[in-house]
Image 1 (cartoon, rainbow, N blue to C red):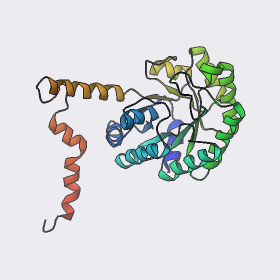
Image 2: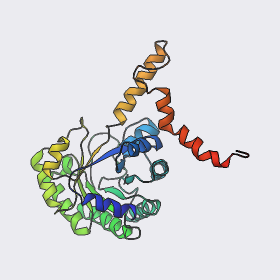
Image 3: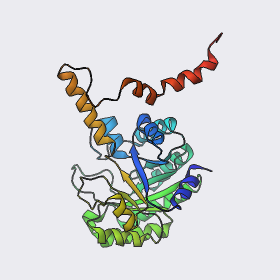
Image 4: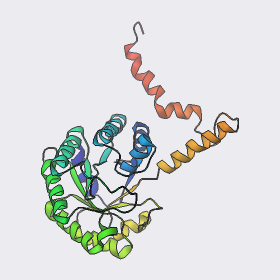
Length: 287
């Protein structure tokens, strides 16, 4: 089965799919080793790791695609939902983006309706007119036919244009053939239920990390509300940043590592030193 076919089969099973957010080879490898079948290549996590900065549309297609290849190389069996942002341009750019990820082995790709380039402010998420958004998703669905990659259609218009417009866009994306639907920044459970109903039985995606100005149900609550996929962009990123800070604090205090540090033997095993030796043994001359 292809990666998209495997993801379709997984989405047909009961229960909420927990999709950790990854950004590089190590996070992907550890996610797969922990037993997860899927992961979200998160634009916010890639921006944090590559730029040391915020997720404000500063990451390019090439940088995201390079990160995907890192993730794919480290965990080839992990089903990856790639963050395609706004497709990096118009409908033709969207098609190029979708085809590239499809050829590279992504299971699904997210395409959103935010305006690009964004206004020079971190506030708000202005979105393009509805019919322009329609054409982006139409282009994505058309391009997806080459590989079978699933299209996740996201609307960010709730904060600027209201829930009625957001629900109308989800309905429109369903009409255009999107496979998974995503209402960003719902205000409450009632808005979530409206969005899930508008998806007409197709899987609904949710961001479940705390902290942002949106309704953030627990995993149990999310499943009860009708979500099929839950991702956690800060689930590993925040602990990783805290771990780096703890390590730096320990060095500043004259120590050699933080008390929370992974033991050396466990770190080497996680990184695969033993696996390397086992595999390399066959190539040793005279071995």
